[in-house]
Amino acid sequence: MPKIIQTEVFTFAELQAAVTEAKTPDSKKRAKAAVEKALDWLREGACNGNFWFEYTYELWKSALNQIGFDDPDISFSGFSCQGDGASFSCKRLDIEKLVQFLACDVEPTDCVGSLPGGKEGEEDFRGWLLKQIGWKEAKDPKYLRLARVAYDLDSSVTRIDQHYVHWNTCRVYIVCNSGRQTRCIDKLVASLEEDAEELRKSLCKAIYKSLNDEYDYLTSDEALAENAEANEYTFTSCGRRFG
Image (cartoon, rainbow, N blue to C red):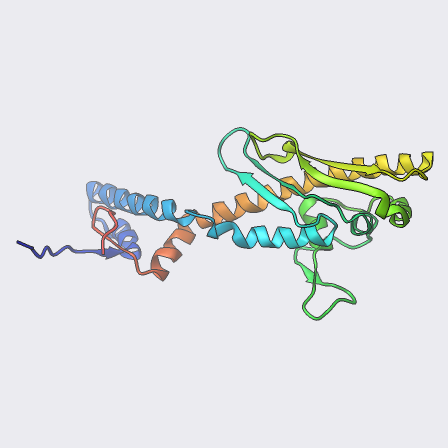
């Protein structure tokens, strides 16, 4: 026969208040244990699934597309094991966009700006990217000469390791397939590939840092408390989720 069981429940804020209001060391210890148990439950659900990093993914995909990494596929693992990290691959590089970014002369900024001469609402990621990867100045503008032979260049960011996804598991490849290239062009392409690879590594490390920072924030005590309040979660006096 069904029974009705009444249970006293508390909000997370009330559990926290019980710590400061405790009159004895034992009661304070029990109150702290309840808060920690509630935090463990909240932390487990904070980054469960893919929703928590979707915004960061989309932000970086848009930024990578703007500087020539077409339709990037971002992967990551984290955040406490050796070999964790982030990387991206793409089937094609837009050489014109890439060399324009390498030769751009913009100031690093903390925020994404508006693209000069772009459509209303079109974002400019260049200054923000420079700040994220720690570059202080533009690369040699000589690469602009490659724009006229861009259609002869085969390029990609290829995954070379299927077991891990850190920054060293992919690589930039740029090859000139034209029979008309000169020694100067070959040297320029090789130099571009080297700088593009340096850029790729810097971007991978910055992507991983962004994801790690977002994870650390979402699992912080402050964010978990805000999440508990927003969702009106309740707990028993020992911190077990109930209600």
